[in-house]
Image (cartoon, rainbow, N blue to C red; front, side, top):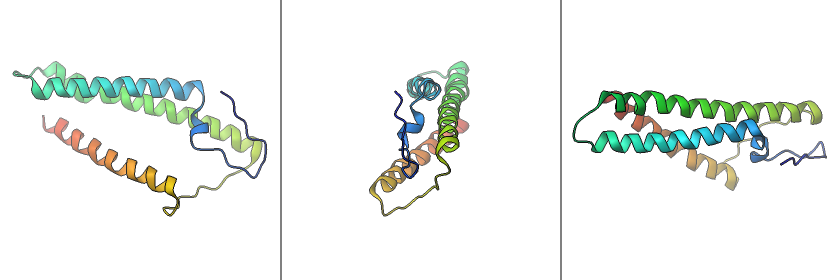
Length: 126
């Protein structure tokens, strides 16, 4: 699980920052809560009668676990990146949409953010 980079000029990949136990636990919590959220959302939207407890679980508890898992994953990535900077020096952040990987990340992030906002709006309206 350890792939240390030996040259100071090279930059670690995005995924190598998340190769630690804290990030993996956070990602597992995120996946579980996302599955729970989708299941509860379907149950709430297709149910014949509304149950307030399903709404509380769907729109309050599941997103809290999702954000907690995201926080753990980001904390693990931050700590790993900070360790890399201490040993190899600073690496500048470059976002260049002419690169294919940056465009792919943008094409995944923007629709996901829009979907999350729409689902949150439905949850607030309910």
